[in-house]
Image 1: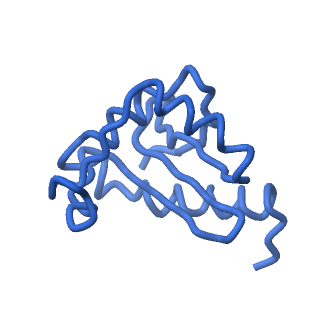
Image 2: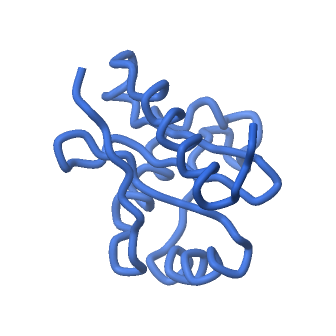
Length: 116
């Protein structure tokens, strides 16, 4: 299994997020909550940039999950403890979600000073 890292994105690095959220297979788990029943979340570059600018105001941590320097998914954590992990469908079943969760927990202890 490849060793993963987290990459905190800049406002100019959101193409993968736009792709990931628009991919019907990856987002199928979200189908019941989406307007069109596919699970996809369609956002523009402008919307993605606006969302990214708001991260510091909401206290949310967001990063790409990288394997050998290439994105395979994304993670996020909010101050209230809610977390999110999306692994692109073609990379599932490789243990990436478990590794990403461990990295995200480390970030939670570091960024939000969680003690448990």
